[in-house]
Length: 226
Image (cartoon, rainbow, N blue to C red; front, side, top):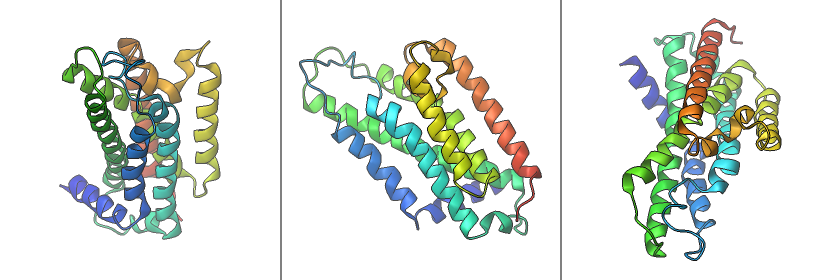
């Protein structure tokens, strides 16, 4: 119950900021700017999250959303207020993490529904498999969880934006550079790669998600908040 109350409080707080609207508008923009040509695409090639979403918008968006959320807490000293609230640090951290995961999930759902509608409107050829279509998007979402957990931890651990920004941008750029020769080290591009090698990347993503969530959880419950 405490986790549910904390999660609800996060959403109520988000609705009073630009975070909520940013998370709604950007996925729609991604769909509208990547309408495929029926001559070049069919349902077999359009049943994946579009490249602009998974390669550019998603990794940068996760970083920006996490920074905006953490700075909201830092600027208003709300991290410190958690010490006097009738809710444990662990529950608060999990609620905050779950809230950011839900925002990204909504973004994925908007892109998925948008691509589904777009594909039917323009009349893509081939057989449309709803389960396969949804499965590809869920796999891609699963592959971005470690990025969310990492940015949540960095946002809570460091009061400024430098460290989270450097890690987010640096990791994204490095992933793009080594993606061809060292794909398994391109952690910021896993949401795109996992669809082609679901078993291998699912194992890697699961391990990274557990690791980043555990480190962030352990660090937040024991760090000093000023």
